Length: 137
Length: 185
Image 1 (cartoon, each protein chain N blue to C red):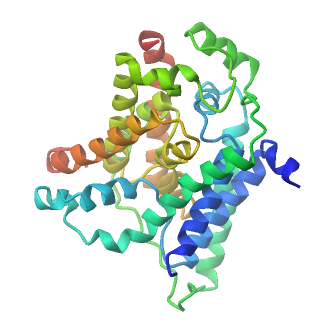
Image 2 (cartoon, helix red, strand yellow):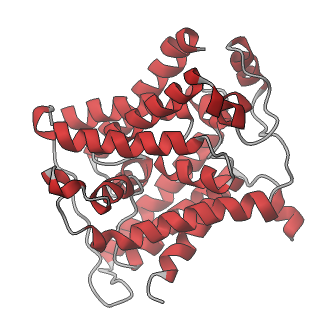
Image 3 (cartoon, rainbow over the protein chains, first blue to last red):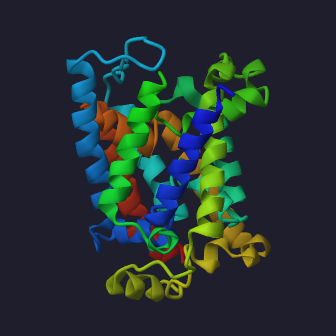
């Protein structure tokens, strides 16, 4: 089955986010209060290794498993959308203590009330789609 | 082995595995970004008929939904087979700060005050989870990505817009934690 590899990668993601407690509201609070290095260590390690990996992929023009070149789409250059959108996102991240990935990992943990936040996430996305053209980008 | 895996994993293991996941997805010819799934879910529910933003071929993003299903399964596997049931070991100062807001010290992965089943019977908690979710969904689409798309994929590709987004994430998180939490809790 072609899609199985994505599910397996997702399982790895769910396990690593759980086992490093990155899906925990407590860890997110600790991060925003600057009272532990833990979350900064996770994100920092991922970014440093990610920068090296992307550099090597570009330098050696590495290809994906089907032989197509690996391409990177540059982010559209602007400030307002990233700043305003980022702030709105951050408010929700700190409140719920989870970003979109961990919202779903927590579902696997059977924290059922998080379904309300997931529903909110879908509704918020829909709201953005409706208001998109009236927002600063 | 299982006993070692059941301990909380150190940050450097987690960070390395997250970078690996980003690279694996690149080698699958895709790009790591979780919040796109929320847009895909809207499109799959037929939102494209009314709102142009959701009028795209969401089936191209089927892989990301399969990743999402895996993320749920990964959480289930962790809680069922790889958990020693211990409380999250956060710092003493954080415990004091959240106790001052009315939360008890950690007893598991998540605070019962927000994610326990009693939350389903509290209007306030439902409103908080719904409102928080709305902010997450709206903000991640406005910013064009969430923690995975910007902080991991974007920063790894040295995209300054992603750095602006991450700074925004922190401004919002600090406002919520230090200004709004004392009013909410």
